Image 1: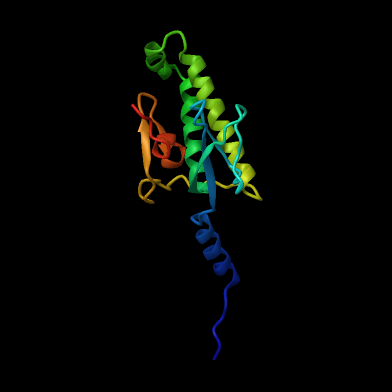
Image 2: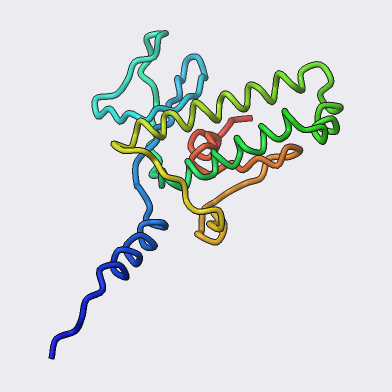
Length: 166
């Protein structure tokens, strides 16, 4: 006797598995030893890069889960939007009276730029993890930036790859 296959159940099971399926890629941290500038790129180049000052830059490749980075960045964007649009932000803005709103706007733009770069790395639309997904439970190294409470993944912390010399 053969078993009856329920296609609806199989589709639902596959959809649930896809909700938590990572999308692996790389971010490359770049440091110019002459200018001491740090930046990141989503493009890997095996032959190296020359900085605008003419110096060969140091590169450090970091493996990432694009969906995890995208999800954390979206959560940061939501938090920044709330701070910019909400009266609760006044406590944060009191600490930075002159530059508070400009600082929050700049952080918001940098999150949007990061999300755009992550989208470029994926051949299709990048779908974030579900709301119940927790980066710490998944073993990601995530730090919380004070006083705003933004999450910073290890892939976005340049000091891990190019330590600041004192």
